[in-house]
Amino acid sequence: MANPKIEPRKLEVVAQLCGYVDDLVDTKMLKPDTCWQPSDFLPDFSNESYIEELKELRERASNIPNTVIISLVGNMITEEALPSYQTWFNLLEGMNPDRNVASDHAWARWSRAWTAEENRHGDLLNKYLFLTGRVDMKAVEQTIHRLIHNGVDNLTEADPYNGIIYTSFQERATKISHVNTGKLADKAGDSVLSKICKIIAGDEARHENAYKGMMQKIFELDPSGAMESFGKMMRTNIVMPARLMGEQQKLNLFDTFSAITQNIGIYTAHDYASIIKHLVDYWSVEHLSGLSAEANKVQDYLCGLPDRFKKLAERVKQMSSEPELIWI
Image (cartoon, rainbow, N blue to C red; front, side):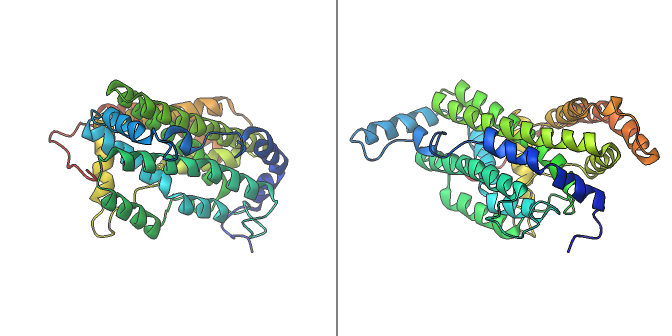
């Protein structure tokens, strides 16, 4: 039974996009036999040279600042909570009407293809960090366990429009985070980690473009509904998927991670503001016409939002004290 809070029009539009989504899966998603895998970037323990390869990896990683390592760990933990994200996506209304994870329905196929590609990211970063010897893996594993145990609430209310807006935003945010981490790794002398971050960012960029394209189609089919959902998600704010990585009574772990990424320029308030502007421009929010009265009000709100968040970002202050060295 459909969620009575979700307008039937939204489910109709999502169903109309099945052909488009099937084509994305068939033409844009990577095949397991031909795409990169984590082992491509790691020492090959079946070769006699593995000891030298491992030694080189550790030497490269030895000069990476602790704050960059912490940020990398946080990025990896975020990727490792993939079971929660696939569950969340399949619970969006209209995405899996068969209630079957192996369904041939277009959106279920997309969910699996997306998850399969994303799964490589956490696998690779986890193994790389383990081999560096730079982190407390027990503490990291406990955080991963806790995050999956706590679940995820992206504040999308099972609404498919909200969900696609969220992923459009979040995939771009993740891409930015990996790109900037790669730059800092390269600066510290770890060219392999830099390449890893860049290739993961490439996947995120492809997924970002797919989700933005899905939402563009929704704007074409239901401009008022799309506009209102976009406005609602911006008023709610896009919450980070790993925000529940800490203990329920002690949630400062994610706050510390976020403060570090802000401090060293991996993911900042300015990035958040720039993503809002990018999406407002990409979906041509300012130029849409034929909207309902309510959607017209939301349009005005969204058009003024990038400047508002840019000004807010300029007020964000750096941490004045040395951050706690979590996971180190």
